[in-house]
Length: 273
Picture 1 (cartoon, rainbow, N blue to C red):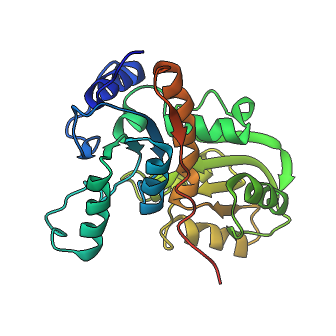
Picture 2 (picture 1 turned 180 degrees about the vertical axis):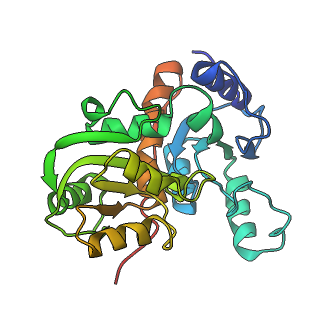
């Protein structure tokens, strides 16, 4: 059985995903651990929370591939928290259990023509046949007509959520749907982009990850208040992107058949009282 080091896993993953490392600068870095460590197993997750790390240890997975930061900021900088009690406790646990964490974010989204986060989401929703192929991005879908209420009830089951925020009439007609996962709903550097997409593609509903309450949220609230058949369904960043990392577990297992690979759900970060 072939043995793999962390660096070998990284190199083969990037080679198969997008022809090799091609984004520089990037946040796709080894956050903690060693590139020369021998890998006993891989766990994929949206975020290496403490509970995810504990579960990886229990499963014997010493390489965690995470989509989002481990150290509470976009670039995983630690100069600000080197004496912080939370950081030190988490770091101590990681080191004691010999865990290496590699972040895989930029190359998943923009390293190739495929956005792997959307790939996982589309597969979980079963919406591939509804994707409008003429669109340059995997954002726009034409689904069998339903209502916002019915869609929410279905999403609660799929995403394991007790509560979903909406804007719009619960019984509004829903057919043309846009999805902007994670921070994409903040506009990808263009604050007004989500509203432009709503108008350009004649969307009934926008499904979002993160929101800014004075942009797409306010736009669709005004639309609803004026009687337009428009609405919004909010999943949050984690729920909208987690299925991409579930997809990655299967993708990696096909390429590393000698290694055990599993997906560990970081779970929705909020509880509701």
